[in-house]
Length: 429
Image 1 (cartoon, helix red, strand yellow):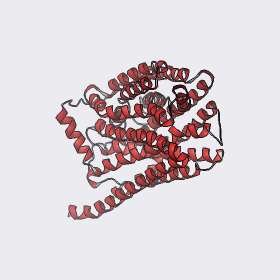
Image 2 (tube, one colour):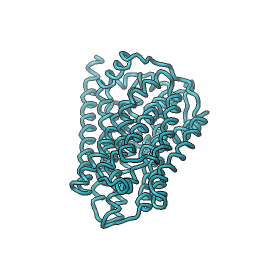
Image 3 (cartoon, rainbow, N blue to C red):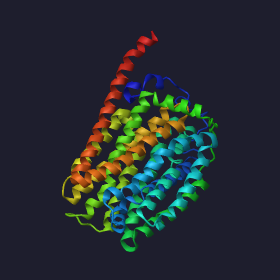
């Protein structure tokens, strides 16, 4: 695809090492090739464990509010602290992965996160629970950036969007199963048993991940020197395309974090008054995200990167507006559209980061993940505050404003791509 069709700058598209070696002599993995299915399933399981742990309290917030006697805005910190810890530590963890290897850092991160997950059910207070969740989020920071960097190094470029889409699909399955399981378990035995069950599932996923993931063949250790790291980060932040992708990831996640932090409160209150188990089952709509994320590669192939982002943003906005209705079927349809749009947009943006960065891929992915989870924390807290002051309409307003930001940034990227395309013949002459 040309720069004009993808929104990429010409300087990025002129770089060929990661884009033109997709040939028979390329030793990297491809669909149907040796190790590809093991790798895909291993990272799928890592995605399941990451999202199941990261959002293990989200569907349980009304119960946590009830036990500790706190409002929605305070209980939401059990989610915001985890995503905030991840956002804060993802860049340092990516630096460790550049030095010690992607698989090593991912394994260590999962080990610490699942260990903390087994302590979470015993938190004696809301403060202790928030602290444990922050530590858990910091530990999980080694997964997202390292996983996408691993894929960028070990998978052929033409298969990269699909491979990252499968990892993101694992995120959606983890988020869905974690919330559904906790909802039904909590209805019978309380939220503490529910998060303990999620911890045990995450342990099994972590063990299987380590056994299945192929050893990297194309990793080259980098430097841990702060000057080198800061130089790499500065280079990434100076790239206009990467900056736009980081902002898009943050804004999409602001919508998603706000909606799914607050939806439990809305559905347990009038006019719906649903029991906790049914509320947890609402998260089965994550299956839609599994499909939309895994098909993001075909979407980009048909519409281009910018077209795919416009479609994802429009789908999300339509879902937000539908969810305003006091009809449960329309609310569910709204959640389906929000979920499909979010996961498609996230898969497109995150894979674009991996393709754009030609060096320091872990740092490039880490910056994206940091922005992404800052958006999650902001969405959780601002969405809950908006719900407290203005009801569900307040939360929807926050989401619509975030989607308008996505559309605006994508449009600016389109304009930049057209300007670059007009200048390219002049520069060549």
